[in-house]
Amino acid sequence: MKIEQIQQVVEVYRVGSINKAAQTLYMAQSTLSSSIQSVEKELRHKIFIRGQKGTELTEFGHAFIKYGQEILESYQNILAAAQCTEQTMQNAKFGISVYYLLFANRIFYQLYKKYRSHNIDFSYKNDSRDRIIADVAKGVSELGILVMPSLFKVQWLDLIHSHQLEYFILSIEQPQVLFGSQCQLSRSPRHSVSVKELSAANIDIITIKEHSALFKAMEAEVVKIFRPKKQIQISDRDLLTGMLLQSNGYYVATMNKNAYKEEAYHPNIHSLPVENAPFHFEIGFVKKQNTILSDIALEFLNMIRSAVVGR
Image: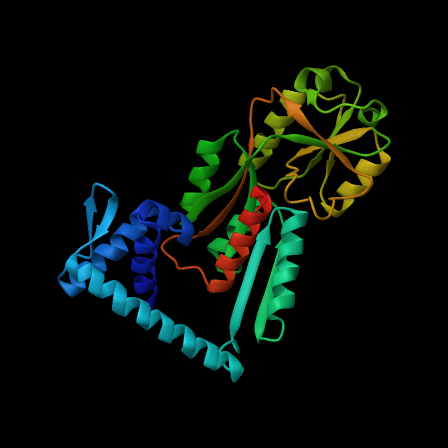
């Protein structure tokens, strides 16, 4: 039995169900169930039973939770003592790959400032979707944060799973168009724009070049929906801000109002929600299957979730 399994059992007890615990631990429900069954098999006693109020403790389960909580408290004390002597983080690493989310950059920097006195190797990469998936599959990054349109979802989920990765949704977002002062969308006040209006307007669409055939097809489908005057494809995300500020063009993306409440995406770039779009965006993350995330990775994910839901 591992310390992570004790943590899992205590978390199921805390939230009252395996399903909820799987969400807070960012694990597949089947993986968590198998882990708990393994503990029960090892100890030859049931810890949980399903009752009228959900998952309930057996008589042995009450004893497990009592001593398990004591073990976890002692474990945290050991970690704290190790941190005080600056030995616990000597070889620690925290790496993530992100699909161009400015608020995620800021959250990562907050974590870096919090833990910079520890000996942790931090790594943060803004990258394309296929490279993010490859980074996590190869162990270059512990987490990959993705922004995915719901178009072709069956196919891109298959791609993720083929790399032995798990995918979890953090937020569902309405598509937005981002544009600067040179775009004709900025010339009249409005609260939203429809796909029909964008298709009829004399405006360019700006897209970021994808590398894999699947993601190229997915982006092509987005362009097909909006039927722009022409497509401007760029290969570097850093060019996007300049293109938006200097062209009569827009970029289709997410723009979570909660995430940018404290600090705007850019003072001279505006956004409008798209009405009647035949797809939505998902902000989610990938990790290797059947792996336990590090404490700092869980902290990062909780900060991301809090940012997008406004807590």
